[in-house]
Image (tube, rainbow, N blue to C red):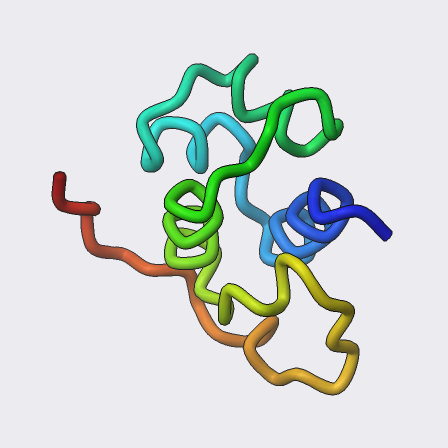
Length: 82
């Protein structure tokens, strides 16, 4: 499974809209969609921002982690700085 597929799976499981994630990380919805589809390169900085918005450990974006409990954590409610 690609990192984009993992991000999408986590996001959908948590009931978060793609446009919400895009806005929180400072991307257009189309640019963010490109990450989920594997058309846009994912930087370490964006991966960390996405993980924070989704409320997961960044490792879950890059590695399958079925046993992890962080999918049950709520997303980060605080606005991101910078």
